[in-house]
Image (cartoon, rainbow, N blue to C red):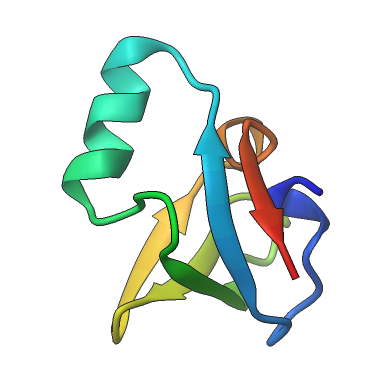
Length: 73
């Protein structure tokens, strides 16, 4: 399942990131690594980006990037 498919407040665990190298590096630097728990908590009024809770921190991720992150429920 892709990260953008998680409903609000539904927990997931990152299993893989399939982004371009520069985006992937940025996500990894923010702590989005394999095994990390992630939860969508906010959606902007336009629907993009969404805010995710990762290790007690809120991180905004664009929909096009969240479609490239695989998660397990």
